Length: 74
Figure 1 (cartoon, rainbow, N blue to C red):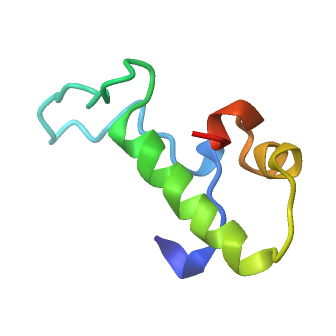
Figure 2 (figure 1 turned 120 degrees about the horizontal axis):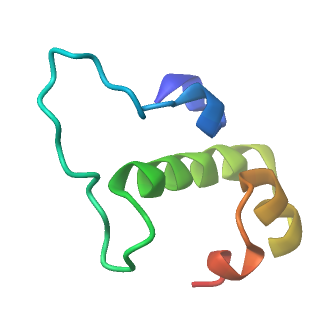
């Protein structure tokens, strides 16, 4: 992704793809709630955060990534 920066949902709206692409399934993962794109963005943002912070709590990291801190403990 671009220059190791954090990415937010507002910057990656994929809800209306170009008309030249054929519709595709959303690519759900085994948990049934996460898509492949969501997982890739989370992993990217975790990597970006690791380059910015040496010491951060789960609560602070969850707030930064805009996810529930309990998801980070898995």
